[in-house]
Length: 327
Image 1: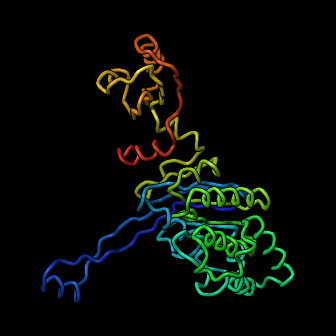
Image 2: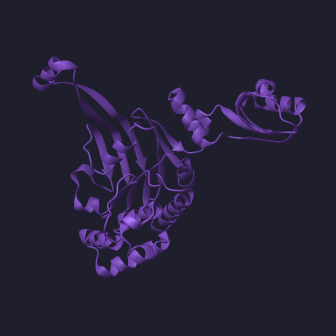
């Protein structure tokens, strides 16, 4: 049985229209008119218990709006949402005890107090007995490698340490469903890796269901086998991460190392040049032309090495949104 079930979910925001000048202001005050912005349009999907699913899309695509509806922060205009057998916007205590939302740009920890004080407050809010609180605190702090930081004021923690403390606070009540909105935003590479490894371990240890949005494709590729792709409020792909290549990447990437450097003009006939760095060249070649193109490269160029791969997933998605290829 699905732990998250979304059917025909839609969110429409009315936005007031105001014309310039005094007349426009008076009209706006006495007889306001509106236009509708569809942030999310008729999306449906299901997520099974224990899945880690990536939620991808450009800025303004509708990711955060969808997460807010799934967590009950905003009411959908149309459609149905069931999360952990509850309707989120009813905000029932049993639902709140089974879910958690972490937003990379927001914080719940009190800035001037040690993180431990905020964690004790969370334990009281969720009615966690002291013995269980200490056990979970110790367990999660070790997993996050943050045991020696919890007595420091939050403002004195690094950004990575604060995010770890935020995750600890969000998971103290052992939610079944974890919604993550850009959890590694702004973190350095080492902190990003630490957060990914923790989330992977947490999912394996507790079977928590995770829905993750991120602009860092390394987060998605490290944690998610399945992705949801949203564009202009519409769900355009729901499937395996590898399946994006088959559906949206008609080209393969050919990387060669030349015996000697050549100009872009001399290489233009072999495919779309992605980059030239010294003697290393990357081409994009249509899949149907791959065999013939590789044969021509081997016959006409002096090369030291050659490899054929799928383009990086972040490039595929970037090209997809830039070109508007959503059909």
